[in-house]
Image 1 (tube, helix red, strand yellow):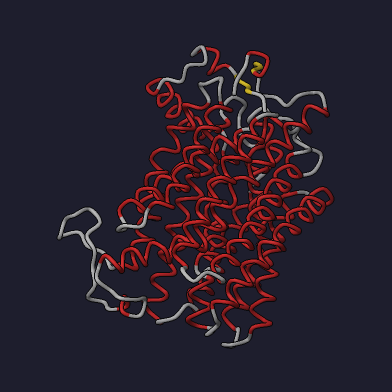
Image 2 (cartoon, one colour):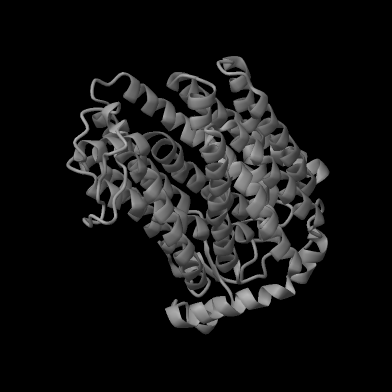
Length: 464
């Protein structure tokens, strides 16, 4: 997918507005392409599917029988390392996160030494979509499904590092908040539209497992097909690192450069402070999303249909919220907008703690609130961080951004696990997330964006 005319030296966006718009539309399309994996596969389908396969392997006749605490599987074939069948999905997710934490800086460092980021993005997406499509054939036992899901999850995370690294190259400083928000918004819309199809497919099917397998195929084809469309308008850009290595990414020099980058981050205290702030407030966001389902079903006694309906509402509202976010950020600046969203998040977790069981309208209203601030917090955090990256280090720094994203999942999960263990429910656990939003907000408030942007040598946008 790379040609000589498609590759230009330098990281800056094109001075031609028409060229920038073409590249931005392509960049948006990859968000549209990949978001269906998170929405349909990770959030809705793969957990029950893996649990069914594991429960069958353990000899359980149905989901009720699989609640027997004595049931166990040995994923690695070793009797000393066993899991309850229902623990297979969170265990695989944890393993995928650990592998990503190791590989993300490697991929980021290599990508900054290559002249062919488009090809990297394409093949990671195609490989991830192939793993997802391959889940159709995973019907006998849980081992093949586990390996394919692990591969798809890993490749998804690695592709996002490359994808995010394009943002400073396709948008001027004043355009990045809008471009990032539009990407998130279209991702939410694409995920919601295909999720509607999948939910109809699953709810009307006689064989839910077969319906899920068909859904996996459609996700894989969607991801790969729209990635090809996304890649075409983008151009490869390269800087001093790639020029010195003649565009050939070598592991040793790339890792040594990454080590120097981590040490040099001491020169950019505002970049480091922003990453710390992001770890905490993103921790709250991810935990609130991840544990909303068990909170709804176990503490609020709400049905699965109500939960699925609320997930769809969140997706569509997040689409609109992401676009509204860009307008607000244009008027008051992205930092104030994110700080405002964290105030709303704090109110939402407080509402969750006080919410009476069985109150469907109030739960849906909380879902609408989450949708409104979800795109805001994530999209503007991405665009703000892009302003604090030295030129030529985009993929390396965004690998750190992704590590912060993945690593923060552990902190929130740990706090939730402790709270649930102590109280037996999720109410106190949800309220405990308030600390993450407050601490993240305080750290973000202390970030001096103008000073940080100037320190890394970037142009200061009109609104901060």
